[in-house]
Length: 447
Image (cartoon, rainbow, N blue to C red; front, side, top):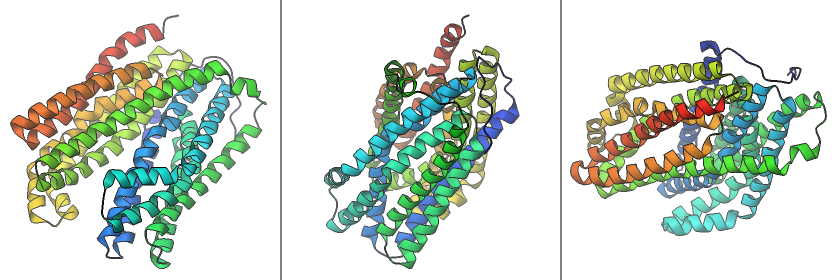
């Protein structure tokens, strides 16, 4: 890959629909490979006909995801800092920001490898499941955590490419990661009969392969750049500022997960049927969010780049275009759910009672995408601009409102109330961030 010649100084630029889509489409495709991978893992383990293995895989994946959400900032935080440096034309700072994230990723990853037995034990204690399920979960978590250094470094690599708007490279790396993962999952898990361990080892190999590919591209690119001093790369003030941004992003991620866990728990209080129906409908919600995530990433890169370039017209246009495309896509997603939702529910579950219950509450899931557009897009804008403290505060306030609505509406309207509370959570986050953005813009672009 050819290295662009580094330039210095702010670089005003024009944001177009083409630039928005050039980032959003590849990232959306990359995100959509995630549920496909989960389906393959489940199908492979499901061939063994043992419910405990399937349960162990599901719970193990949940434990792994919960641990790794802590490190989402390695992608989003790195992306925002590099986008701002890219907007300023500061090629050396782009490279320095990556190496800072790389070091944090490597140290954190090796720490997770050492902590794997403890993490597995905590997961077993929390789930308190039958021995066969616990054993399968333990195997999955211990093997999968061996990929932690490579997986976290991949977050930093993807953050670098997304920060520069090179979403196509990010897509290629995700295809390599998931392609190797799926192929080895089938070969090791099914053909060699390793089961849950084979699925986990397939993931380890996929992460390592993608990391090697990404680092080869980056090292070739960095070799053509001027040398950078360790003092600049690991400047204490810069690292402190980066950690401040990243801690706020981490808090935001934990709160989001907490909201969905609480939603699931309250659904369980209404009975197994309601819990199962909501689980089915959440598939529609999550797929819609994968689509919106592409435009969130576009907003993040373009907003960060505009902040770095000190280009308010580009910032404003980035906000308008990503929001417009987001609402358009959300409308299409809702229409598709309304049109084909009943058939899709039938494809997900064959249990008649669950299917009927899910179809009854289907409109709530169909409207989740329009309700969440502003929250997703504003989240991208605020991360890109490094306004993470405002994002954290709004998330905490919205979460408090969500808890109040969840219990109040749940008491009055049952499952309708739970879904209404989820929409309140989404809508309040978006509207609150939009209102704050106006004042932040006035100060961010003062000469």
